[in-house]
Image (cartoon, rainbow, N blue to C red):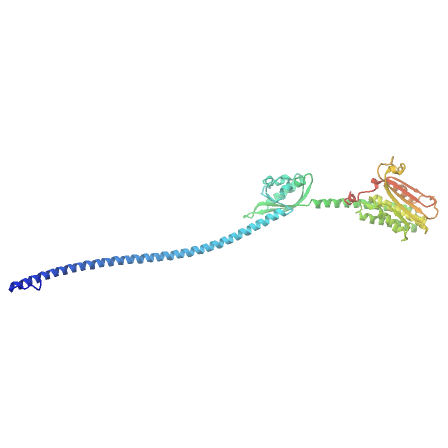
Length: 453
């Protein structure tokens, strides 16, 4: 086998050939094995390539699928984000609308809770669903639960008012609004009293355009009604006063014309007496024709007959408020006394004057009971008004020989009007008139007179 071995002859050559053949065979065997191994490796490589290619295809497909899924996911995320943004915007709008609704509801609640009107929402049967805060106080309930579900018409006991409420509810059910005034007998905070209400009833339409609720708003007009009643009473009283005044003017005119020496003298006397009545009316007007100030009446006579000369009248006395009948009679009497004093008495002389005094005293302090007025059996008890007209410093006077208008006025009207005693005397120093009457019969409370008492 080794090249270094030397064999003799042919045997040596044959031996080399055999060895070479064996080596070739071994080499061919090795080559065959190497070729088979190479073919197996090549097949294995092809199989691995196919596997790798298959895996690559699968990976590409997976990558493409993943890419598609990712694209879809991204689009979904974008859509979700858009939806989320839209939802957030809608939520913000909804929250803003809710806030506005809450603010509107709160504003409406404050209106209902602060209004002085009585606001009610009723069902179509006229039962209370909700009322404003003043509802329990108006309808006499302790709380809202005591009102809800009750029939509104049941609270109106006055037949006319209840009929008005029922008629308004019927009109509202037909879709017609109405307005009326009704009287609520003493319930709630006005228990024991009567209140007046101006009521507006309006139907509340539903989605179908037909009434589904009724709104009633009541406003308290009690003070307005009381004012109207007082005005009516004052107008009636004024009409009565005017009739009395016209009757007095008629009597004065008849007496003046009956005793006047001429038409001219009658006109002058009547004009002066009407002026005195007009001044008395001015005083009465200050008391709304319900009273007259005694001081103002005396001041009117002083201004008319004093000729602006200081000291012609000396007036002393507290201010009292007389009734309208007493004021008119006294004003006319002061005019007659002033006229006679200017013609024949103290005011006809520059040195003369008239003292007018009055005071309030108890009957026991009078020093004896005065003579009763015609038709009066005995003097009443209590404070009495004493009024005195006294002329001083004039010419000597004598009692008149005939009874004139002034004397008849004093003898009849004063005694009858004041309900006391009236004395007119003519001492030489001048005429003196004294009036004594119960204070309660002639004086009034100024506050009561202002109220129409």
